[in-house]
Image (cartoon, rainbow, N blue to C red; front, side):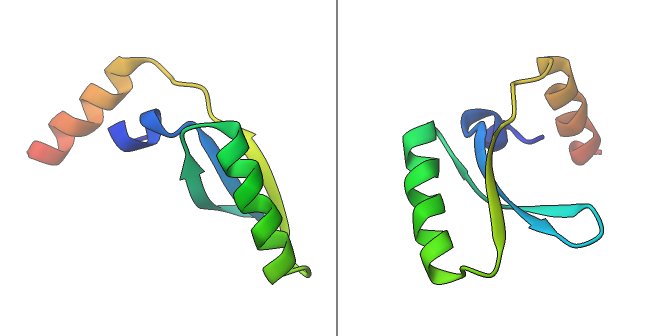
Amino acid sequence: MTYRDHLHPWCIVRLLPGARSTVVARFCDRPEAEAHLKLLNQLTPSATYQVFFEPITDSSEYLEEESEAEE
């Protein structure tokens, strides 16, 4: 999870067949995510979306990712 993802813990996930999913968008707060979800449901009623909260994990995980990217 990148630093930007830590700043945007609310995400909209599109549920796909075969127990797969993909993150469509990330938001700072839940009302923004829910408003965007309403719009997505109107534009693509055949797709299934869910709003999720991804809690911030240990910051050392982020630091490890950054140090690996620098190498």
